[in-house]
Length: 198
Ligand SMILES: Cc1cc2nc3c(=O)[nH]c(=O)nc-3n(C[C@H](O)[C@H](O)[C@H](O)COP(=O)(O)O)c2cc1C
Image (cartoon, rainbow, N blue to C red; front, side, top):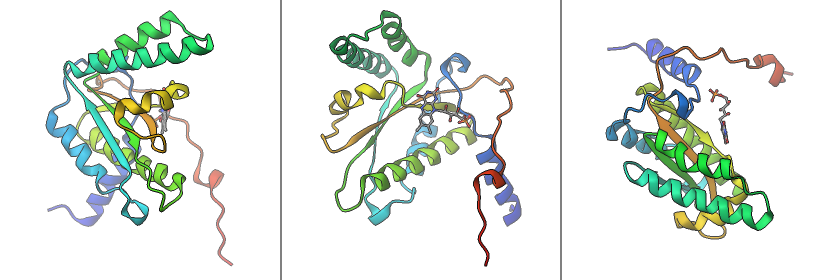
């Protein structure tokens, strides 16, 4: 049995080694359904003020990815044509990117007025981090995308979200190729921490 210190090192390694990975770096392999289920299970244990459990997920797999791609691209078309920013290249990318993934998970936040909205958003982000750590630990990967958030309000009802709820983006998931990623530059702890001890 592992001692506590080994477990601690494992958790730390999981956190520091998790990386966002993108569809061009996916192998094309499917993430096993059991991994996706474990990710969703881990979301249940995110911290949530007053136990509102605000996360709502829609998982797209198999032919569901084409269903997602069409709905996503159409939402973009409707929104961008109405304000004159439509790009055919962008539209075509939206039709193809989901097909490079193994799964796509839409991330929603179900509003509960008993606590402020920002607390609900924080809680969903905690749930997503749990999920992405489980994914990384299981050999899966991906990233949280908020690209196109300008039309999220118009697209939210597709995910059965009400006006007061929020669509918070998509997890584009796959099995990353086993290639080294560029090192990450991150601030040192001293850069973002002020200690007060007197
Ligand atoms: C809320 C949120 C939204 C994000 N949206 C995007 C996005 O739209 N496009 C993108 O390329 N990356 C997006 N990312 C991923 C970040 O780019 C990524 O986390 C960052 O580059 C750090 O890399 P790492 O996750 O490997 O540490 C998002 C991350 C978060 C937490």
